[in-house]
Image (tube, rainbow, N blue to C red):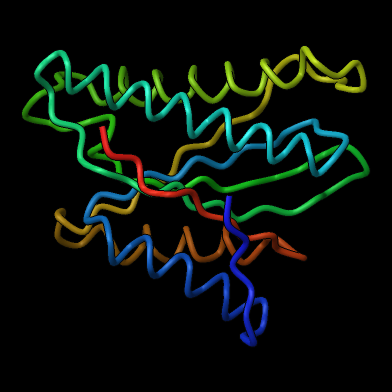
Length: 177
């Protein structure tokens, strides 16, 4: 994962990353997670595992005849307690759900939640310091294709992203199925 740091203030960096994600994807999916992670290495391992699993999901969708356009995984996170880490994962919703190819959006979002939990459990198993068996996942969506919804969704996403202090910002390479 690439850390995004330059001369901008932390708030400016967070706003820039959120705006880049919204500008790049008309249907942006956002997952807010609370992880029980004792070390920065665990966070990196979790992000790498999610990247691999999303890549596999996209390839599986392509092989089954359902499109899965490219995406970049953008992360904003912050340590909240000694062993707790909160993070936002932003990605192209079309990578795992397209209304003309998938009947139930809830099923596709549940698939993503399951994928995230599996990634979390993968790193949790390798470290006895984890205390929680479950991670809390909240879904946010910013859909610029639905008139009248995106402003409120954008504001909610911005508020969530700005709640992370100090913020760690990373992004993955593009996922091309």
